[in-house]
Image (cartoon, rainbow, N blue to C red):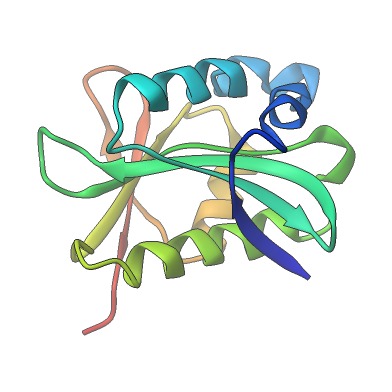
Length: 147
């Protein structure tokens, strides 16, 4: 069973120990950096991802002040738990969490390195559609909520 949990005193240190595969490290900032960033920018939501009682991943998302839409800024599954479908299940939960918020927007955006083929397949599998390369070099993808 996959579920999201708040990050607090009981699990933040375990969250910073999570790591992606060596070849993926350039694709995502460290969880320690992301947790620190969320304290400076309180509109960012940080969540730990669990499978049963085992911590397996991390996510950070929130409304972007520039465009007013939700963005998934960070998403990672620890290297030990990749390839089991947990990422897809967790991404669906994040989308559901955003959809259930009072400030939900019509779309959710994310950006990823164009060479991140594993990320591309994951995001497409839950309904994100690529829209092109951003000026800062990331592939942008958009998830639209059904009306």
